[in-house]
Length: 303
Image (cartoon, rainbow, N blue to C red; front, top):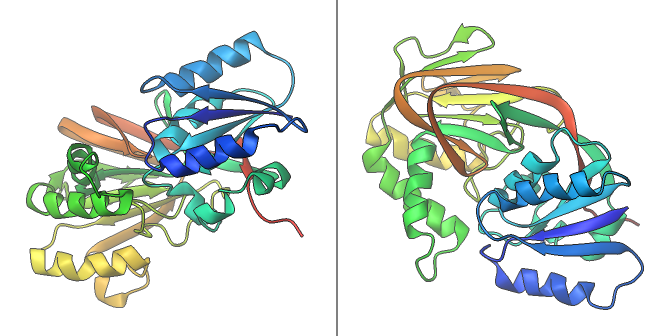
């Protein structure tokens, strides 16, 4: 097994990246290379070209960054044989690893090397992939705001998301499209506040959007929130953040939940769709779940 560490130098936690580089110095007990990305989508391109030039042998591409870096890596390895991905979470969000116990389990080189390889589901949207969450509506307004403020001093990923939420309260609480879940139109009036389609559990650093998700059951967790007055929205956010929104009887009138293999999204005007924090734009999207489509090196302590 060869490890290739894909390092995003623009990721949020510089000390974590430096710690990894220090740990790799002088190591000759396993084969590895380090590659620094040069811009958006570079990791995806690098992985494809590297595998084309090196078609033999097992390789684990380790995403050293945040959820955006993970997204680029899984888009690179999807469809390739004898490849897997790992995560060294040194970005601003690191949402996917929260399903597996959090970043502390992954910021340990020995845990990575001794970890087990498991198959996980992948969501596809055309030629693009998502491993954690596909979301739209209010959440995309949050991401648009985050893009503007995340470079501000003293704003971590979680705080940037909170600022994004506050901004989106004024711009993204009423949205329009048709959401068809395994053939069922779940918003007949065409209105919605937000919708998440998840294989992971968390979004935005601390919001447990999909508390019932399993990363390899072949099903996506679909949660749509209906439009609601501001006062009601403020009350719901706390439940949503803690992952209590699906089982609260008082929220049954505003929360629609389904498990699905396919979700179709149809809009009259162009809209944003967010894949693991990366935004694409269009009027018609089809999100399909591919069961156990890629291999993930689950980093954890071994006794």
